[in-house]
Length: 49
Image (cartoon, rainbow, N blue to C red; front, side):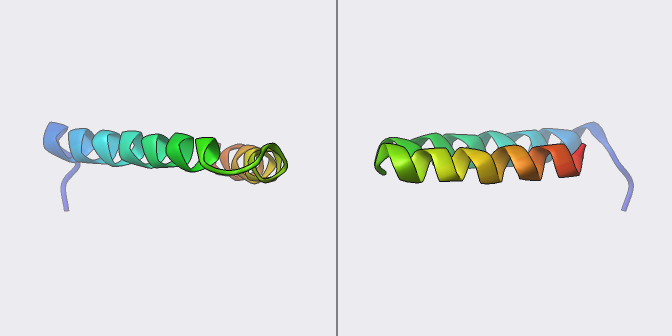
């Protein structure tokens, strides 16, 4: 599979969708759950980069 501009667009929209879902989920949970989730996300993002 070649990495075309369309591929990057699809991945970009996919990541944006995940971020939107994460923000929606964080808003609908308690502060404690949100903090735990943020720690998980930060751990994941640092591991990915």
